[in-house]
Image (tube, rainbow, N blue to C red):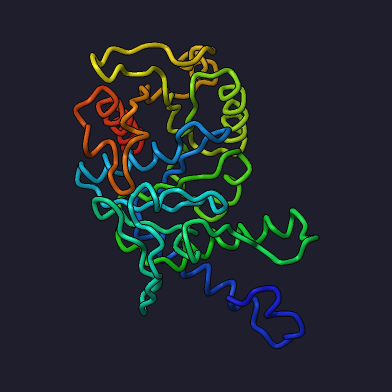
Length: 292
């Protein structure tokens, strides 16, 4: 599809035809994907991308075909977590081939479009670009990543959302049949304060909330596997009761999560650990919601 710059002065372009064609292509892609799930957090730093990657690993371990769209365009991390790196995109007649990460999980991310791992996303060279213009560019990028990628037949497409609640509008407009959103928080007072806003917005928009996941709920002693308190804050389970959403996961912090190398997911290596079992329980609760 042509960009705004391509269209200036090009009055003969069939803009409506292009938009219609892209919409049909997007619909064709999404029709082959059974369940689309957005993973959200009110703020950054709660481990959302790590949780997304490990949920994908657990789903794959259960025999599902899984893909991840890294919708955090300005801070993508899924490629690193699943060991894809800066692979060159391969274009075929069916579309752009997704990267294949750990366990064959299909991935599409802005990282795959950048020259190197430390290259930032630059939406425009114009110093006075408006926030509205940048937001429009981001929305267009998400739509094209969804529509141009040859996802094939998938059981689950996990959408790793950027922090905040504003991007869900775009995803919902592109994927009206979104199965729901998983809200991720940590037990800190600040994180809970902000995730509450995200939950409220989803309620108002009619986005189904699969449930609330409490990440870093406790820490696990690396020697005896006993759990201890990590943060002070309101009981997250009480927060879920107050907001009338399911509490679907209580995931302890294990130091081995942060020590995992690129492409080596925690769940795969330590599924029988306290944290591994908590991830599996979270996935079971997601499955139950989907099957209702």
